[in-house]
Length: 287
Image (cartoon, rainbow, N blue to C red; front, side):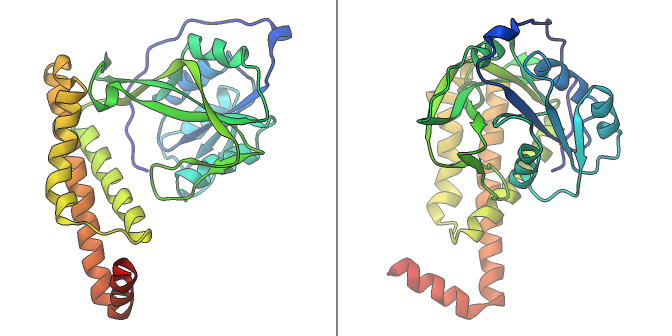
C-alpha cells in the first residue's frame, strides 16, 4: 500500500438537524503515510458523524497523530491488506452502518445529505454512489475514470470486505442500491506517482488472479490492453478530456499489459516450482 497524496481543497461546512438523522453511520478510513490528506478527509466526514475510525498501517509521517488530533479513533497495525484493514475498522465502529472512505477522498455535501435522508430497509445491505476523480486537481469527466461508481456504504451485520490482495468488494447477503451524491477522489497527484501506483495495483491484481487459478492467455496479454485503452479513449469519450484523456488511456493500456505480464511470470514460476500442481491445473481447466 504505497501511496503518495495530493493536497485536497476545503469543503464548505454543512449542518444537520439531529432529529432527521434516520440511520446513524460510522466512518472507516484506511491510511498509510497520508499526513497531507487525512485532516481534510476527516473534516469532510465529520459533518456526517463523530464516530470516525482510522486504521493506520504504521505510517512514518505522523498520520496517526494528526488523525487523533482531528478527533478520530486510531488503530495502528501492520499492513495486512485492504479488506483486512477495512474490516478491522468496522469491528471498532459504534454503528452498524459503515461508510468506508480513503484519505485521498472527500465526502461531498450532496452525498452527506443523501445518507442523512436515507430510509433503510432489510432488503438492501449496501449502497453505491458516484466517485469523481481529479487529475492534478482538474476533474476527469470522461473515460474510465469519468464513469466510476463505488460501493462503500454498508451494513456490517450483513456484509464485509473480501480479503483479496486488491480491488476488494463487499460480500454477504442483501441487495445493492444507488444513492445520489458523490465522493471526490484526489488520488492522482502527478504522472510519475500515478504510474508507480498503477504498477503496484497491477502486481496485486496478478497475485489475486494467480491465487484464483487464472492464466494470462494470448488474448489477455495482447488484445485486452489495446481494447481497454480504446474503450476509455473512444467509447467512453476520454478524448474530450484532451491530453489528460490520452494520458489516462495510455495508463490503462500499460496497467492492463503489466498485470497480465506479471500473471504470466507468476504462473511460469509456479509451474517450475510445482510441476504436479501445474499439471493438475491444466487437467481441471480442460475438464
